[in-house]
Picture 1: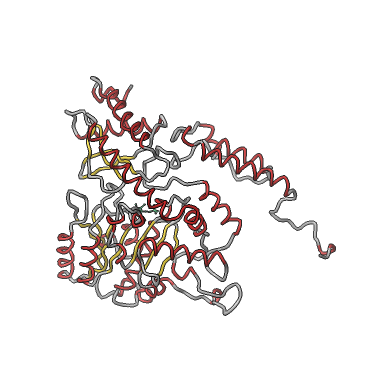
Picture 2: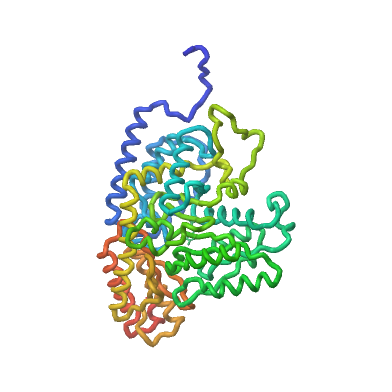
Amino acid sequence: MNEQVANPTEETLDPCDWDGLQGLAHQVIDDAIAHIRDVRDRPVWREMPEQVRKAFASPTPERPQPLPDVYRELQELLMPYPMGNIHPRFWMWFMGAGSFSGALAEFIAAVDGSNLGGGNNAAALMDLQVVDWLKQMTGFPESAGGTLVSGGSMANIIGLTAARTAMAGIDVRAEGVAAMPQQLRYYGSEQAHSCHQKAVELLGLGNRALRRVPTGPDFRMDVSALQDMIAEDRKAGHRPACVIATAGTVNTGAIDDLPEIGALCRKEGLWFHVDGCIGALAAIAPENGRLVRGLETADSMALDPHKWLHVPFEAGCALVRDANTHRNTFAVHPEYLEEKPRGIAAGEYLHDYNLQTSRAFRALKIWLTLKEHGTEKFGRLIDQNIAQAHYLSGLIERAPNLQMMAPTTLNIVCFRFDPGALQEAELRELNTEIMLRMQETGIAAVSDTSVAGHHCLRVAICNHRTKREDLDLLVQEVSRVGAVLTCGEGMGAATTD
Ligand SMILES: *Cc1c(COP(=O)(O)O)cnc(C)c1O
């Protein structure tokens, strides 16, 4: 090392005091372990005081601050006020509950620092391996294409874009949708996730190109109605292109008839896409894997490791049975990204299967989590959540003023407090108030929705920390708060007390 070339005006982000940093880093780890270990002792959620809100309106920092001070600020402003989804009584939306190893993996991925656009490095191999594992877990062939993305919404966009490439009838990448000889039609049930609307809009097909197929009393797609719509669209000169089957709907957890829809797609020559963001991973569950049988025959599939694998956000995965179609949908080769026979840029670029160029090292948290626990444990945990949903449904059925609002297939339970003699609007107001009070007191987080036009509370149990006693407490509290709100006072009193 030539001391003379060192220029004292040259700066770096590295610290001068690595030993001091080590002390702080150890503190961060200790605090993190305590934070996760003691989550059950804290409320699910709490409202932020005004000074916390104000703190986040402070201007861009221009001058440096010691890292320990910045960390202390985080401890005060951030850590006491999370969304709550790592808590054992968070069942509000469908998302994972996190884990310490998942957090550690995020840290290690950032320390490695690789950009998963691709290239000849171990992180890229790990990325490919994780995609292969997800294929194996869902019964997809080894030869399929696949890519890790931010989440389920993006994974669905990847699948639906591959479907457009395959079904456009022209080179749609070169010519654009305006040149298509026929308008494409996609089909999803009226219970399909809202991301599909964004996807067809983004693909230039228009929201109207996504036909909403009615569902039956079980909230599964009515396949004979689907068949009629396909025939109707052909008659109108459109090109039926793709059916989006949902393996586990957000509202009720209903699973469309995958074998029947798959068979119809093959008969009619349509692309078969499965939105498996909720249910695809149930394929590894010994008791309930049968519920999603047929998923492995899809042309493309979206799944969401940041749900039932509990890895930190963001982690979704798109699989496309025909790897060539997948690649032909996204690959571009600008001169500054030419692959080389040797060195750092050797091998296939991962961004050729994806819309992103730079990509996060998402694979590590999935890899580490699967290595640590194994798929058998995750399968059991998925079964456990589904059993808990059925347990909760049983409690609700036996409770005097609670009413089930949809059948429980998977791990989602829809119900409401209904003391009788109230109108629909009053029930909506009452149940909304119950939901908000439980959030504000930090007892439990549930969401609400409407099924078949009826407002209800919705419990989605995607949580490895939930115990049956937590569900006992939920039923007890909903009944108690409901009784307090309705005891002889009517709803007018309920909202003003
Ligand atoms: C969660 C979910 C999505 C969206 O996934 P994100 O990871 O939130 O982007 C899509 N479809 C279904 C059925 C889902 O449950």
